[in-house]
Length: 268
Image (tube, rainbow, N blue to C red):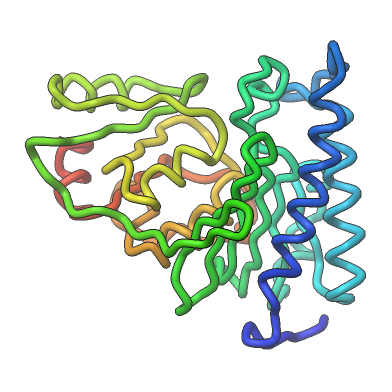
């Protein structure tokens, strides 16, 4: 198992890989009717997913030989093999496949570096908008479009101007209850990991996810949220950890400010 120092990881090289995968996705996106299969969990799998997976895995292994890659499209790695990993890449080659098929543009490429059980680097690239969100531990979170780069931060909670963000396709009973508790709040609906990005850049206050996610769905966003000053964790306040025996996450709460306030309203 190769050991790396985070300071030696050039995040620009990871962004470049995400962008390269994004170009491949857009080539498929621009076809008249993208073809897809259905996975065992009944979620769609497109040629774009597979092309992005191959590009990311190949490029990461070229730059960082010996660092394993755990990807949604290549995830069948036994825990007995994973349990002693010091570092690994946690990848969702295309998050938001349903949005891709619906042609909304709300799909992303997610790449995170995990050290033992926590994300220390995250990149979320939005191919349809040529926008990239990224973060590295203790260096802050950023949004890049073209040559323009700006630091992003979560916002302070204003009880008179609350913004809730919810999934377009995956919202459960707890989300409905939270919306009822704040009837005057503005509600944003967004696909893929862009929901996390809304909180990270201060456009929303809270994102409750009460239906299942996997580690690759949250890892890159987790790094970005944390460095932007927010919280992404369990409803009880426990840290969300990675490389678990089961890669399934518990229900999650993402907040820009006052996580305890939101936990109280979610759990009461």
